[in-house]
Length: 114
Image 1 (cartoon, rainbow, N blue to C red):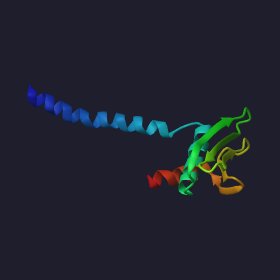
Image 2 (image 1 turned 90 degrees about the vertical axis):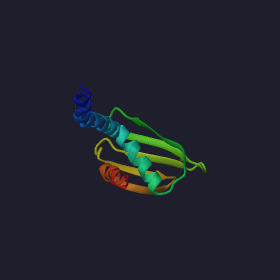
Image 3 (image 1 turned 90 degrees about the horizontal axis):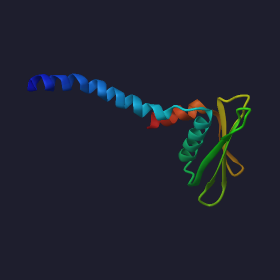
C-alpha cells in the first residue's frame, strides 16, 4: 500500500508542478494599460532611473493610455501609447525621450533578461 502511494505521488508531481507554472505565468499577461505600464517600468529600470512614484496609468475611452510618475529628484516620468497604434509606447523622463517603439520589444527584452 505504501509503495502505491509513493508511485501515485511521483506520477502526480509533474502534473501539480505544471499547475503552479501556469499560475505563475498568468500575471504576466494583461490588457493594453498593463502592458504600457510594465513596458515603462522596464525602460526606467534599464535606463537606471531612480523612480520615487511608479507610473500610474489611465486609459481614455479612445483606447489611448497615459502614465505619469516621478523620479527621486522630482522629475516627471511619463509613458504614452496612442489610440491609433496601441502596439507602441513613448517613455520620457522630463523632456528626454528614453524609448519610442514597440511595446512587445521592451517586454520581450525584459523577459529574456529575467
